[in-house]
Image 1 (cartoon, rainbow, N blue to C red):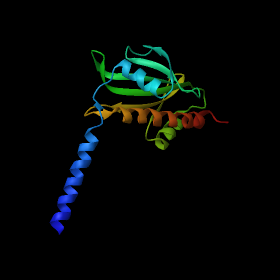
Image 2: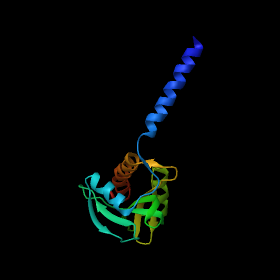
Image 3: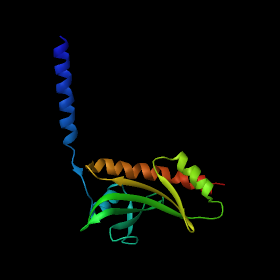
Image 4: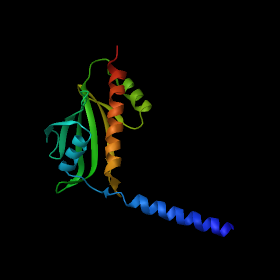
Length: 155
């Protein structure tokens, strides 16, 4: 009886693995792929190539402006994606507050560079990732950005 239970468990595990492998995975993205993630999310592409040739600037329906950049690129195929949003920093954006924001939000990096404060999330495509997972990473990133803005600029 135990052997039968183990055999059934093994078959179920293999079936689950096979089902998981049927979802299309990507190991690199192009600028066209990045554009598709933006438009599929219902966002508007505002510009291409402002930061690198494999980048775009986009805006959500509620006004959050963000960048998607392909990284570790070779011949237009990029093995990483960085999502970022930047805001004008004032004197209230101290390094101590940046550190606190990082400690409270492990899913993103919060940084200060000259007169701006930014939020970013880096996705590595090594080994492959489904397009749905990349879209979820974008959704999660954009869900965190307003909280970071409020942390620094809410009165």
